[in-house]
Length: 90
Image (tube, rainbow, N blue to C red; front, side, top):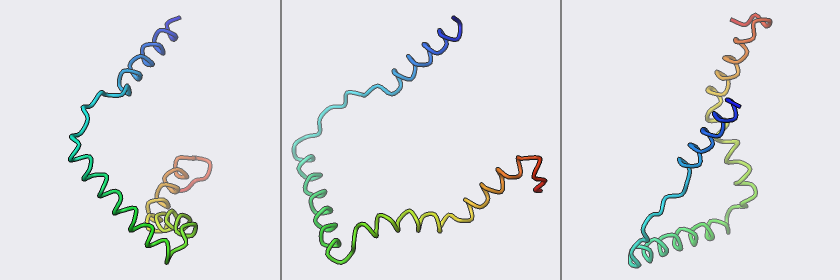
């Protein structure tokens, strides 16, 4: 009963925090500028698509990020392994 009340209160709090905020619309001129900018950027991506295979790019971007952060990933793995006392890693 008490746990149910606590979980209901937490759920109500989360629904309040993550509820959408009613923001006013942008002026038409600013929206037109943003739309034009997005169109230019997407056109540039299409031009790059002539020279690059997007399937390869979508595969290699996470690999490059993982390689660039390999030291941090290694430190995290060692940190977790040090927390297991049976292994005896210090």
